[in-house]
Image 1 (cartoon, rainbow, N blue to C red):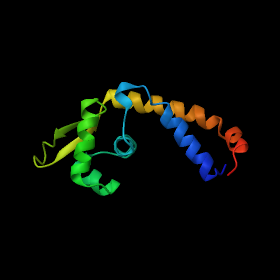
Image 2: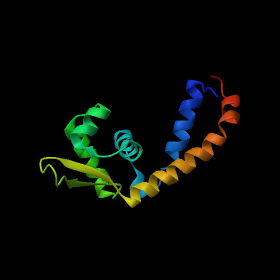
Image 3: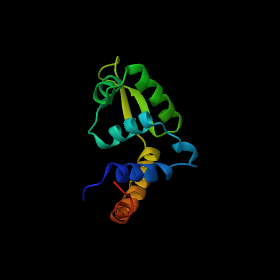
Length: 121
């Protein structure tokens, strides 16, 4: 199924809207992209590698990781093999948050054909 840009934006809006009101889930687009990258791409993840993969500066990655760490959605730890490097790791809370978000997105996606038919494209 091919979506119009309007239908795709509506889907994105509906998925994003499901996170509103969740205290720990008030994430920026940058934070959500970083969180998704760490959970969807194979490890290991470093600040330098995340910055390169996502086209972000290392300070921007660090700020996003600060917020995600405070919410226990990701964790940082020093790489024992290379003490200069910091590894970014998944957490149980982050995995549960993204599983729930994925479930809500899948439920909303089931309604896409009807929504796409109602909207001009």
